[in-house]
Length: 210
Image 1 (tube, rainbow, N blue to C red):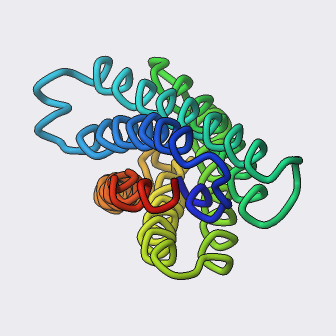
Image 2 (cartoon, one colour):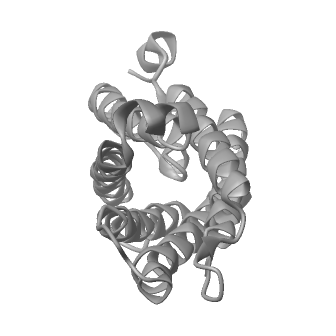
């Protein structure tokens, strides 16, 4: 999603099909990360089910990012071809780290040290990957893609703030700033959701390219 719109399309109709799958994957993943932080949702479904929602969202992120990396590689004809490929590759690595941290977050009775090692650390590095990917895409974007890159970059920044705020203070066993974690996660996910909608191909554009 972050760098996908920058690649050059050689097969418009095939691109429309893959773009829809990628956009759908990111949209579902974003929706999971949007609803997951809300206190009312946690109270409604319980912490265990809420953890499953986050993990499910991360899996959809990874699936969509994998398809995006595949498409970027096929369209450019080789891997590591330009910044858009690197943006997709770094984003994919970030989603794998989110898989780790959301899976570990479902464990009960973790100590502060375990929380920071198993949940906070992969979240921080995953968010750093998203931020690097977003910056690459934003710098390389032109025309209509620039708006999508800007929205996604805003989401990356918000996810980064959320990751930093999720550090568990060893002396108290409490999250550094839970409100910032929840709000920035939800707002970042909203940005990614909007970005996924912007990725959806327009029929008029596809017909012109065909």
